[in-house]
Length: 266
Image (cartoon, rainbow, N blue to C red):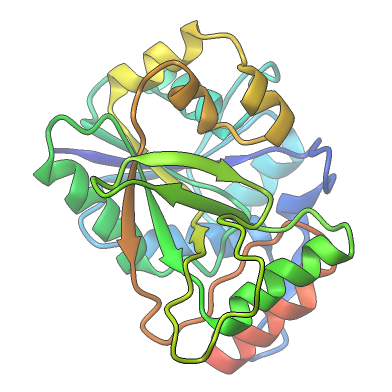
């Protein structure tokens, strides 16, 4: 099953304009753009046939090509990364059985997260869309709650059933617990990792559906699948001691840089 990784990158982000070109410094102190670090993360995944950056902005395209990335120019009308992935398939053809959307704001995505996702799609031919989820530890949960207390758009949480089918995704911290979680208790909150795997048919159907009301309110593209009755499979992954955080706001840069330094990543 040939696998393609697409890294969607948009300059005109509402939450953080120019985010793909934001510079992050790791252990060496040498700045590398967010899009380059996302490309580096994608290239670490084994068994991938091709990686491309998908954008509609010449500034991002030129920056990506400068560090050796393959770029596919996509329409400016793409409203999210899933639509941009669909545009890439229209451009490249349907030679890929699995298309992975590795969002360009998650440079700390471990390669085994993506491998687990691809393996789940290969093992379940009926799965049309899948995405990883990571159980929060106490530090991650406090980061979520701190974002909400201060009115910041933080990471996304996922709620799913016993068959690993998503019930909902939200920028709020779900499920609501209403009390402190004891040190001996398992935290019930799952961090939704910003990666998706699709079948080509799921991407084609996505383009035919209008934006749903939940997708519009939450600003979460995956809700369009659920609103149209297409299940999203949640694949639980393990951090293996590696911190994971996305770049959603400028205030996330110091946090990610600290993690890069701790990991010894240049």
